[in-house]
Structure formats: C-alpha cells, structure tokens
Amino acid sequence: MKKIIGIIGGMGPLATADLFEKIIRATDAARDQDFPHVIVDCNTDIPDRTAAILGGGEDPVPQLARSAHALEAAGADVLVMPCNTAHWFYDDLCLQTRLPVLHMLRLTADRLEREGVRAVGLLATDGTIQTGIYEKLLTGRGIRVIKPDAPGQRRVMSAIYDGVKAGSIDAIDVPALRRTLDDMTARGAERFVLGCTELPIVFAQCDLPYPVADPTQILAEAAVSYAGYPVKKM
Image (tube, rainbow, N blue to C red):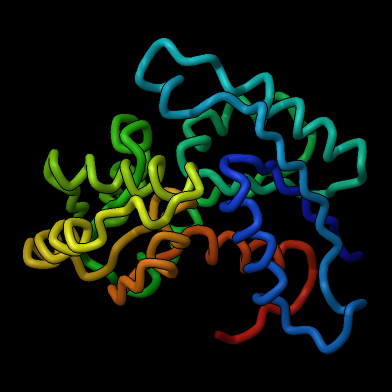
C-alpha cells in the first residue's frame, strides 16, 4: 500500500515549497500517477521556534499539533516537518499524533555517518545551536561539529531572517557569509550541514558552491521511500 505524506509546513513558506519540490524531484516517476500523494498544511500561525527556545516566545506545540490533526483528518499516513528548529519539540508533537513523524535531524546524522564524514560545519538558527540537538546527534556518531564564531552566527541568522523569511535575498551580505564559510572550512569542516530549511534556498540563490548536507533533501528522499515509492538516483 502506498502511503500519503503530510507536510507540517509554514516554517517558513518557502522552505515548505522547497521540501515539496524536492519530494517530487526525488521520486523516480514517469507520469503523474507515479508520484506520491502529498498533503501540505502551510500553517504560518506556528510561532517562531527560536523565540520559544531562547525564552519568552510562544510555545509552538499547540499549532504543530493543530497541523498534525488537520493532516490526519485529511488522510495522511506519515508526517514530515521542514524546520530543523521545530525538532526540539519533536517528542511533544509525537505525543499529540497517532502518525509516525520522520525525524529530519536523525536522518541527516545517519547519512553523514554512513558517508564517513568526520567533521561538519553547522549552520543553523540560534535556537537550534542553543539546544545542541545537532551537536549531540553528530558527536554521538563520531562527527566533529564546527560552529561559526559570533559574527558568523549573526550573518547566518541575517541570511535566514532578513533574507529568505523576509523575502529579500538581496539583503544577504554574500561576501561576509563566504568569509564565515571559508573560516569554518579552514577549521576543518568537510561539509556544511544546512541546519535551517531556509539555508538551501540561500545557498542556491546566492551561488555558494560549498559541499553541503541538505537535511531538506535527505528528508524528501526518506519520505518518498517511506511512502513506498522509488527514489531517483541523484
């Protein structure tokens, strides 16, 4: 039996669209009927996850659960979340739904371990960095994690919030971002984990030709496979 994929989206809208497109492109299909059935709930009412983690922000779990329930009612068989930071609330969400929820960060860590990567540069929101969720998953697999320095982290956050989320790619200081990536490469990063789902958009639109691990792509391929469809060899 083929399974229906439900996307808990809106975190942010472009990242949601990016996952949907990657699910389609990851499917080895020859006609419309060969692609998985995907239901998207682009719930932009989900509060900012970084604000909730760093203190004072509204809890996103009720709105995450609302989306999960809507997707259940619509017929989804498995859920995915195109937001790295939201995975800090993964266990709480799982208590609110009967459906399996694929864990993007674990899937990414597993892929890097299988591929023998020894050190990565972690690019993520302040919230994801603060939780240490990626660091725990990666170091537990013997992978060293290199993070940006303070100015570099501010550049990453600006690219995410002032660039993609604000719909203003031109606001991104690309040369400064390149300096951050070059510094992390010099410190041993073999690959950059795009640990915020806006970052694949940044890298594509700002022409940043660095080796990456794209959790959105990894999640797309896992969702296609879980739903019972063949994954295209990339």
